[in-house]
Amino acid sequence: MLSIKQLPTNQSSDDAKQEQEEQQQKLFKVVLTTIQHFFGSFPDWLKGVDDPRTGDIKYPIEAMLFAGIWTFLCQVESRRQIGLKLRNGLSRINFQTLFGIKSFPHGDTLNDLYSELEPEQVQDIICNLIEILIRKKVLYAYRFFDQYYTIAIDGTGIVTYHKRHCQHCLKRKTRKGETLYYHNVLEAKLITANGFCFSIMTEFIENENEKQTKQDCELKAFYRLADRLNNRFPRLPIVLLMDGLFAGGTTFSICAENGWHFIIVLKDGDLPLVNAEFRKIVQTNLCDYLSIRTSEKISIFQEFVWANSIRHHLE
Image (cartoon, rainbow, N blue to C red):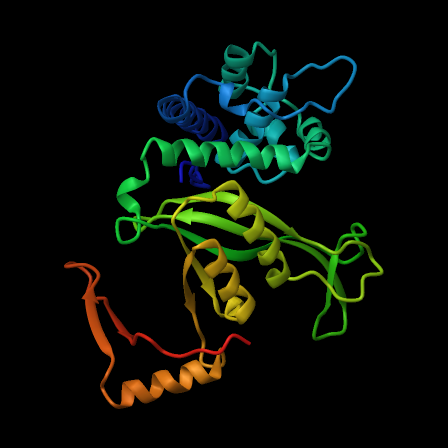
């Protein structure tokens, strides 16, 4: 991933600032070159998101969207740091050249806009970019068995609070009896064997209201995400990569209906009947083995053991 590296702490403030400016400029040139090569003229690929603001608008919507991407690439950790790192210097000059604005947007300005955007429209931009990469066969060489695009499904946390943030918060009890409120998302990411990772679709894991008795969870979110993924990419040959949480009859049925293949990593406690049959096959030496040395310079070996046609029950 392209980003600004952390600078040594023993540098003087002037030297550190100059090096940071140089890094930002190099990164900016690389980002623009990459975007124009794959997605065309800038910033046309950001169009399609309605601007919820009214009155006097200082920053065009495309500038605001790209500013969010830029803060991520520069590893800005807070709204306050936007003012310290980006509102002066080369970032301001670059944004003035691209969008005709006098300064880089303030962190609060970005936050106010993002809180009003329609997530579906932002998601649509992401899907459009993935479709362009697929259509141009940029990811063609990274297909699994020269046919399938590998999409990893996994949940991740966003924020955690000690007090309720909103009516959609999930909640859990800690070992100390403290109640924590949090927000998670389920991510579908198109990944490649050489380490590239492209977010393709996001599903929020959240309760409908604070009185909901059964909380939303990754599994429920997967059912919703699978429906959206199939509607948006109905003919895309897919292999889903998932953990044992998704090993169940409903998941298997959804994959079969959508024509998807899947690889699920199982722990010993997942699908006991499948694990028991696999152990029996291993004991009788009827399984297949493969040992791989990952590098000639580093003596790391990976050993794989597998068996085909293991029966499983759709529970």
